[in-house]
Image (cartoon, rainbow, N blue to C red):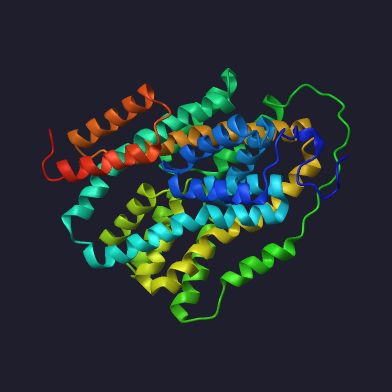
Length: 400
């Protein structure tokens, strides 16, 4: 019998298995520690693990989460992870997923930032960025295809929407919120399923107090720099849609040009670190926070950038539970899904444009992509490690 406080109504095809909170936290801790390739790869990994292998989520639940992660502010992969935690464990599950998903990337970037402060001019560090970025490009492009194949299936109109979204993203070099909303509005008519008369789903409730306290806890008292970092990155988190890379121009305008917290080179290195480390790309905030305000600054920036994802997910999932039975809502969500798949592919090509700087990096990208086609189940950290070694070997001595 469906309980009125359940995160997902019966119509959402509840999966056969329900994880314990420990299993949920352990999965997202491991995903944060070993998930490379940006939002596309992470979203694809969650589909493979949570839908296909573990059966913790149903196909429709996953598609709903992908659409919500796009429509709400916050990094797509992180938002999707918080959603998965919510539908399987309520608010506590969402909090566990949120903390576990961000913990490992935070600690990794914190350690890198400390080393960077001492060795930022060393050629070895430049070489690491040189070799790893092409591998990340291959992971993103391969994951784009997998994600599109599994979510859009053989619907030609869906693929057309995705192609248009990819083209617009490449032209404007950004993921446009209006593009997602426009696709959703068109989807109301073009993707709405045939009309049926399902039973009205029970309404899902939520307790926002827990998340309000969690977000308020991030705004701890401290030095003016620490408080300023939290406020700045909280506002920045409200602007993130899809890939965290969309906030890079915004960050540069303030972090480099207005506040002068970092030099241009330090900022570019921060973005690169966000790309090559596991977890969401917006973990760049941790690196910036550390360089500006030490460990306290890193904590403030990290909590600030991720807090909007928690708040919006807590509000959006119960709303979806109320209206999910509507065929128009289903069409709207599918329209958004088609646009996000295309936009993420376009973002992957933009990343390729910045990561492939010569013949050697082009060769590394092709080799990594070929390896993924030859051995699709090779661990991603293994490929990233190979890219790191190649960077150390060929940096300053390109093959051609």
